[in-house]
Image (cartoon, rainbow over all chains, first blue to last red; front, side, top):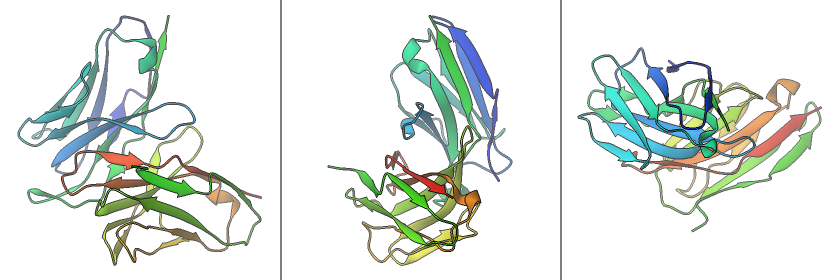
Length: 114
Length: 112
């Protein structure tokens, strides 16, 4: 089951904040976040692991609520370079292990204006 | 390190033709994936592999086949190309720690 992202699109001014949400109907072992610029491949931002460990980006943070099967990406003091489409990815879980089947949400398009 | 390399970058196929999209990685990652991305849409998983000799279907496998004879290579085969297969195809590789998936630069395929 594909994770569901919200909102579908966000328009910001430089310096404003944004939150992108990702929810799954299945139990999650970890959540990945990626950003894709137009015409380019997706690039890894961060991963959130069960138990709260977080690895990734310096200026972008995220949370992971295992019980609610949700993750949120927080973009603070946005810069023009933050523009792009953000995807959450869930590797799928079987018990306490990843299954390896990495599927993505439908994406959230973020546009940061000067 | 090159990471994940896809070839070709662009291809135009006629309806009914077949082709193989190549994907190679030099990171010794066990997990490899094929996604398709239609214009303005998200990434849909076609097939994935958890190691050499092991493949499994993703969300949209119809019309495609894969093989994984080595850790490095994960080719995607299109048989009897159809206009609905016009898309950008991405290959990705992920290590067993599941910390970061690396994507190739994509293959833009048009079926006419």
